[in-house]
Length: 268
Image (cartoon, rainbow, N blue to C red; front, top):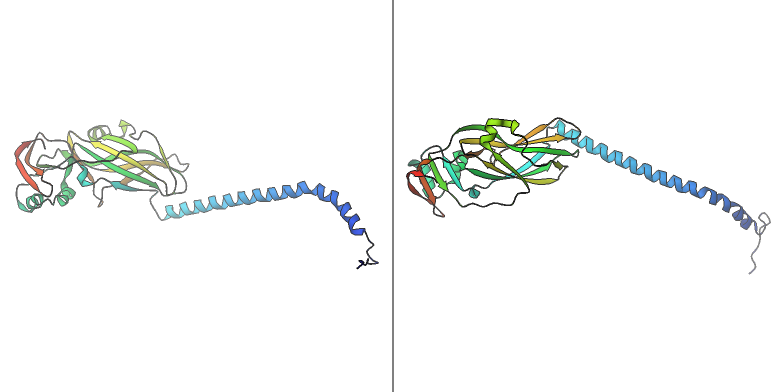
């Protein structure tokens, strides 16, 4: 069947128009490409501004509600110490019965101190979108007194390898304070949800101490040094004592219970 040509539109007209439009399309092609590129770039910039603005709003909301900027998990199991000491001599009463029955944990939590050294693993977590730079981690002494020389007992030791190690001598900190310089070897940068671990090895020889952990940090672009504090499980302070020359009474672990090893004992 032969195709019919409309009188209003002579044959070959479409071909001529297409031929005339081709150069125009070629000329505007770079402009179209530039428009698409600019639009994509603007969309990326706008998306970045929205994301940044929302992160800022989240941080301001958390600051307004006084949510901590750093959180931490503090781990120092009671069974990981070498020895414990008490200021008083446990020679009678319910405390002695608990100890002889192996129920030592309540006594340790109430007033027991590690002897000589303690290891504490601190897992820090950033709680803001704006970066937090941890500048230092150290014990903060809450109180001190003469070494505990009343009762001592020994437990097996255990421990994990440090990630960011911190070593602190409480006797030195008590005498020099912050003038002793920083204890963390290098800064730690944290953003929201990021975690890092710090292992503190804390020692004492001359006195008995109660202390918590102080984390110094800078937030965002501020040069102001701020501080957060963390305690042992149950919101109680850590306790550490130097070794005494003699203890009024000594106990030794027999796996599931303790037995008295003597009075006026030398060492633990």
